Amino acid sequence: MPTIPDKIKLPPNKDRRKKLTPADKDNIKALHKQGTPIREIARQYEGKCSRRLIQFVIFPERDQHLKAIRTATKGHLKYYNKEKHTKAIQSLRKYKREIFNLKTYKPGERVSLNENKRINSIIKSQP
Image 1 (tube, rainbow, N blue to C red):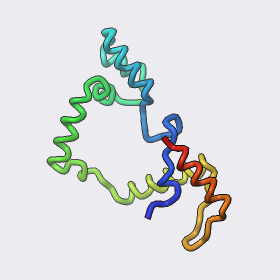
Image 2 (cartoon, rainbow, N blue to C red):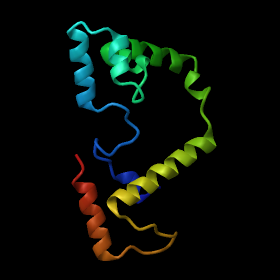
Image 3 (cartoon, rainbow, N blue to C red):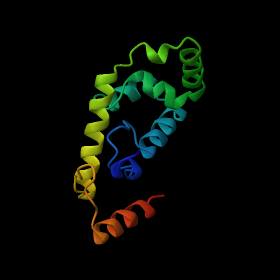
Image 4 (cartoon, rainbow, N blue to C red):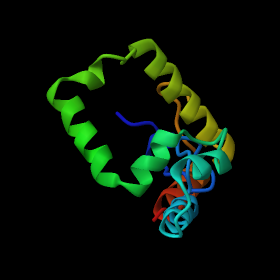
């Protein structure tokens, strides 16, 4: 059963899971159309993302091709670590609770009516 933070979507400017914003992606595509080499674009975004990610932004068909290969060979399971994934999900839920000022509820504990209304208004205001 999903928890309250699982139902809430993060705004794009608060989502730490995304390395590049849509504006960054548009900027990368524009720089490439102007003739800027990929390595030079990667230097501008050094520390934020890899050169390979920039290639995937410019050439999305390469990313789709590699994802298809990874799915066919079950390569996506090669690096999956259940404990690491669990910690990442817990960290994301904690981050959402901090951003939206949510209380942590124990199993069986009831949510007050006012808090329930506030949570539902947050969820409904999501795009």
